[in-house]
Image (cartoon, rainbow, N blue to C red):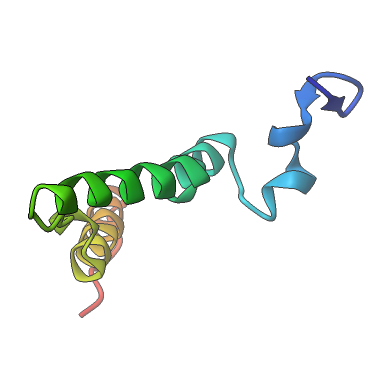
Length: 87
C-alpha cells in the first residue's frame, strides 16, 4: 500500500486525501455511509426485493431523522459541558 508522511500514514488516510475531514474516524464513518460499496449493496438489495415484488425501504436513512439525531447529539454535548441550551 502506498504511503505518505514519511511512510507512516497510508495515502488513503493522509490529511490531503481526506478532503478536510478532521479525523480518521470521521473519514472512515463517511466512507462506510457513502462509499461505493454501500451504494452497490443498496442497488443489489433493491433489485433482489423487486424480483420478489417487494419495495425496499430505509427508514433510518430518512433525512429528517438523521438531522434530529445530529441535533440531539449536539444538544446532549452542550448539556454535558454546562452550556446554556439554545432555543
